[in-house]
Every structure is written in C-alpha cells, then in structure tokens.
Image 1 (cartoon, rainbow, N blue to C red):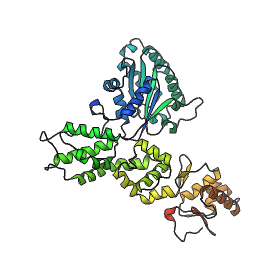
Image 2: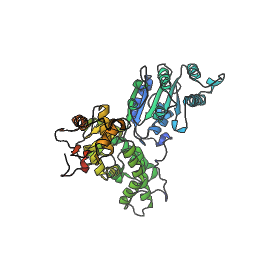
Image 3: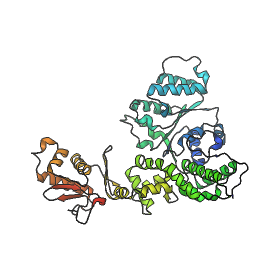
Image 4: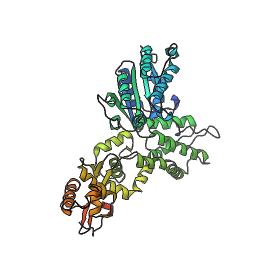
Length: 450
C-alpha cells in the first residue's frame, strides 16, 4: 500500500548529476573506510569503477565534514582539493594553476606573500608552507591526463615525487586499473605502484535496502513492495537504481490506485532511458574478453575466464550470478550472433595488436604472421589470393619474388598459432587453386572448404 501525506510529493530520486549533499549519499561504507584508513597511513588511493558507478559522488563525499567525522579524520590536519580534467585542464601549467587556486581557496594565508610564475617549484614551495597540514589531492577522470600528450611522463614522475613527501596524498578515479593505463616509457618506478586500489561496483544488499527504505520514508511513497523488480532492472548500481526508482516513483504518483498497476510500463520506460548508456558501455568500455564473459553469463553458460568474471563482479556488471540489469542482458542477447563470434572466433585489436581466439588471448605473433592474419581478418569470409597476401605481408615490390611455397609455409605457421587442431583447420581454410580465407564460426557451413 502506498501512503501519501500530501497531494503531490516530491520525487527524491536523481541520476543526472553527482551527489553533493551528504544527506543524499548512501552506502559505500567499506570503500570509505578503506580510503580513510589509507589516508591516515599516508597512502595514495586509486578508485576504479565503470562509468556512472558514482566515482565523482564518492570524491565529493570524502570532502564532507560528515564523512570525515564518521571515520575519525582530523579535518584540521588535511586539506582536500578537488580537480576535474573534464573542466579544461589542458596542460601541466593549467594543472598547477588549478591546484594552487584550490589551495588558495582553502588556505588563503598561504598566498599572502607569494608571487611569480606558476611552476613545479612554486607548487613545492606552497606545499612546504602548508606544513604540518597535508594535501589530499582528488583527481577525477585521471585517465584523461594520462591520455593527454601535453602531460609527459616527467609530470607523473613529479606527482610520484610529491607523494614520496609526507605532505601529499593522491586519490584518483579511473575506469581501468592504473596499471592498465598507458604511461609512455618510464625510466624509474612508475606512479601507479604507489596506490592502494579500491573497486567501486554495486551497493551491497544491506546498503541497497537502506537506501530504498530511507528514501521511501522521506518521500511518503514507499517503493519497498517493488524491491525485486527494481533490482531486476537496475541491479544495485546507484545510477541505475536511482533511475529505476525515479521512474517507479513517478508511476506511483501518477496512479490513482493505492497499488501500482503500471509496473510493466516502468520496465519499458527504464529500458528506453537506460539502453543508450548500456549499449555504449557494451560497445565502448568492455573489451572482447569481458564481452565474452558477460555473454556466457547472460546465456547461463560457464564463463570462459574466471579471472575476468571476478573483475566484472568487482565492477558491478555481474551481481548475484547474473548480468546486473535485465536491459543489459537484452542488449547482449539481442546481439547473439556477434556475441557468439566473440566467444568462438578470432578477434584482433588493431590498436594494441592483441589477438584472441575462442575468448583466449594468444601470445604475440611474429611480424609476418600478424600481417597475414590481419590480411585475412580484414577480408573475413572472402578469398585472399596470392597477390593480396604478398602485398599485405611483404609489400607490392615482392609480388614476383614470393612463391606459393613460401606463402604456404607462413600459413602453416599461423595455423600452428591460432588453430585448435592445425591439421584440421576451422578458421584459416584453403580454397584450392584460389587462395586462403578466414572463416568465422557464424560464417561457416557444412560445405566450407578446408
């Protein structure tokens, strides 16, 4: 039964902006405890979570008096400064400028007598003047700096050097683990190995239940009766939970009945609202192995890689043994042909040069072997003749210098690397008298040549 204390109660759910008010921040107890314990020990922290997992909201909450009191942080000893590369920090000079502006806002007395060009030297001088207080520098979307060519390796070495001093600790957020981000060529110890990693995935079940009970009590419209349906739609990832609850609340408020009759419509509305985010996540933010594991979970099959499955659980994509959202499951199963090819077929990441076969990454191929595979892969399902192969692998100057025997030997070596049974190839088939063809499982037929 729903209880309405006033004719038009206000919808308490929101999912378009980060949470700034500590009264609206729920859960993350274990993550907060780990982060604050690390800061007390003068450690830096890397927060890793998928898009819309609440990373920015968590950084905002770290800066609140309420959170710091709850976890026994001496606010007089630490100065928290938040930087967001999305706001246009284009190079190192702008980074130092934003950092110094943030410190000036928190501790104006530091800059009473300081002048001169913004530089590493000035940053060090200000931090020295800050003592005995310590800086906790919160950097959101840290991978944006890593990917920006205007931030050389020397900049990150400088950050590492700062963290080696007692007055600075970093808290960063990224989608990937820091060790998986590109850093260029390091001469010394890399920055990422000084961080404690905290994964941000789903709320725990008690955290979700507390959120639902508390928000239902505040608004005067209880969604507790629809708990299971909300979990089915949104899992326990805060962004999607807020979205599902908001739509459910609106349906309750619009209903003239004491019970919600239009819950199927809520599911339809949620699918329309959430699907673009989930499709983008599937296409842009999951690698082939992760998609293969999620496809197996969605189909009720044994995942091909338990290590990847564990990481997906940490990130919240898998909860209670299922894909976290029924809408994401629909996205996956709706692409069943492509999903099967991810699990069963050959996949090449041209950016990294990595090759997967049947969901497993191969050891690096030889240069010629990789070029041959790329030639066949780019023409999947089509015959590549001698001239196509020689031009792609050796170059057009070699068309009259590479014979059939040399090509056959290279094909044989490539089969040894990629075929489960090289004597009975399933991927790289010979089309006698014509050339070779890469056949993906979804393209194969009983009459495919071998």
